[in-house]
Length: 377
Image 1: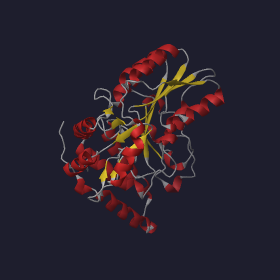
Image 2: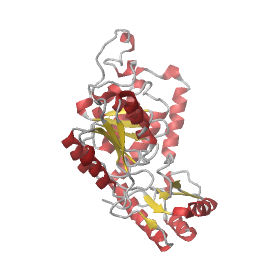
Image 3: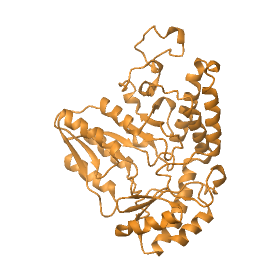
Image 4: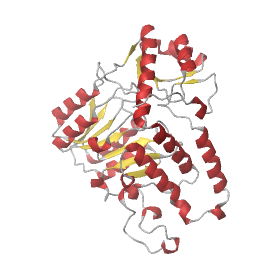
């Protein structure tokens, strides 16, 4: 692993802005903006677009995403949001009346609402793992799986708890899910692209990530991993481009039941996204150049320095052994309003989630940003 130097020059970021909020949304790079201008120009001349333009950028982006995720392109589908991926999983996974779905307390709603609807529709319960005092979600999940294993059909979990940055051991959790016959559905929105995530070792049934956070996608594009055992499942939509031989526009009315290979059958309608897809391809190219393990090492070191700053100011962070490398959760308690006002006044952007201040820096943060944060905090 290599600790990377800051790359602030790649972003159109004012010098007086200290942005520690990548978990909220990552800014596009200058190169991505340039790619977006080019794709907008192409869309203004549809007479210059051919059938291949519905496929080329999509498949290039799929291959780049597969490289970042460490899987094959056939395992990935393009979706508009994490909720779309969760709904796809709910449509395909077996669930019988009286069973239960396991979630975390105050888990992000896109991986909760769908399961609430499922148990209301078919009968059953949501089992909620309570927030641990020591940030050890893994132990809480394993305890719940042990206590309710005969009823749990699906465990719907993140890799990183969205408000605190606390990390879950998904390899261990997955092994326990398999032992009791429970499916595993993951929302990886706060981990993919920023920390190594071995999907082959975890082997979830479905995993989805909102692209606009750590995956450097423009808002409206996300990615879903589908385990090979579900490649013959059913997508949420029935549309033309996911079908076999859809590249042949003259033969589209020769309706076929067969699909494009792998997880492409789960792609959203209008997946081509001629304006947005080239922007994401450039973002994924940049991630591949940095390499996820280098990003994680760099952000872990940076967050370690930020943790020292807030510790010296009398605040407690999520323990190093429990947190992800790229998100630093700070327990500010009843001082949230005071701290928030101070940060905002000094143009330091971060997020508050409950009683946690969430810091999420990325490759644009440099020594001047760190010094400023230390002085203000």
